[in-house]
Image (tube, rainbow, N blue to C red; front, side):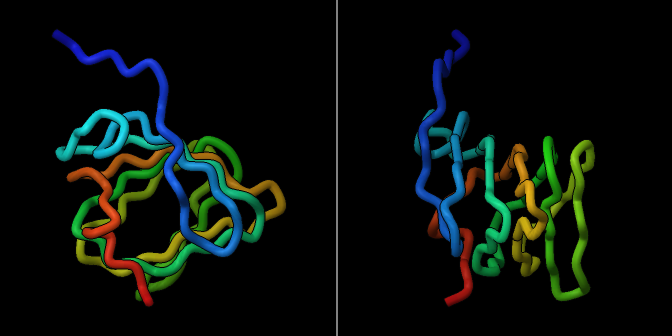
Length: 120
């Protein structure tokens, strides 16, 4: 039988400003370890620590612009665009523009605080 998930779970976020993370599928809301799907809303000026995760992250920007910085440079991913951050690659996410950003992130396997490996 399919699993109905009537609502997401709000997950605590890291970074210099409050960010909203609503997990629909993942380790917390559905006890799923194979993948996670979350709706993110980050304010203007938000920056999170860099990370070298053990998962691939597929991100679709719905509103605003998400900056994705890697050791090779920075990408500005705007509404209607997507980005893939590969496991084992250092990345840092931020939303420097006035409107912030809204986006959907899918992680394979599911996001975990243990496997994200954030910078100290």
